[in-house]
Image 1 (cartoon, rainbow, N blue to C red):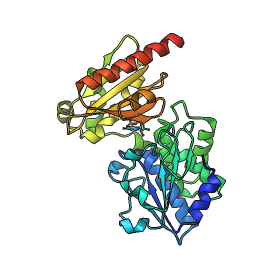
Image 2: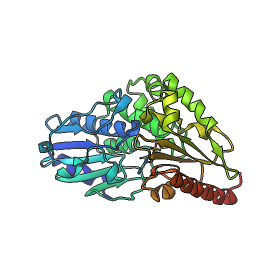
Image 3: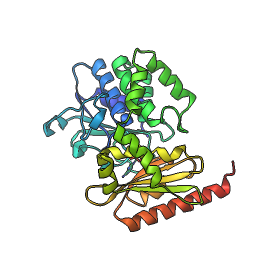
Length: 318
Ligand code: AMP
């Protein structure tokens, strides 16, 4: 792993810096990319600094993307944030630069970069970016604080998930002191449309609970069409089963326009990232994603989650 200092040296020695993040972005992907780039813009007004990637959806309150030609990559340092593996990097031109740098908090299953700082214990890539900016004395202003705070709130589930530490609160406290509207940020992250709220309840009707404590629901195109929720907004249902006491680990399968399924894995205990890797996916120990081609693969995935949940329950008695 590279040190912050080595990475900062590479940043200083390049005139163009281009930030990439993962596809299907969440607040941490956009926030880590935006916070880092904004701070560098303030520190190095003469450098060309860009954020790229597709499908920003309704996260444009955090940042907007730049449109750049391929020629902009000539001699550039390319930095990916929150992006564990190459197929998930949004805008596949990330290889066109002079050097590739990875800043991430997922397990390092695909060490694709020339320099990388990866800490799977960090609850958000935005927290790592904050630590980087502090360590290298880079500016942290209100405009830098907003995306970083949004990223931390997003990836910790509002400071609820297990990787949240006292340091996370210290970082959040500093960012909150810089004049950002933490109430508005929390609302932007947690508010849903009426149709999404209905779907969050509706998913409970489709939830199958196994005696092991594993559960799953399949949201087909038909269900989504009737609920009037666009497929890209259906992942709003993913955290709903976690509120149920009896549920230890779960899958939400969301059918895509091509008939395959995007798979969400969540867990309160058993590690599910290795299970997701078996199905062209990955992620964190307790939150991962993958793809399933058909009903047969859905069955296979859920059987694996049931087995992991059973094994976990045998060794953990609360
Ligand atoms: P999601 O269920 O889409 O919210 O994703 C949960 C976590 O798993 C995030 O950290 C994602 O970056 C990661 N993830 C989701 N889908 C994939 C995939 N197909 N391949 C690798 N990682 C993924």
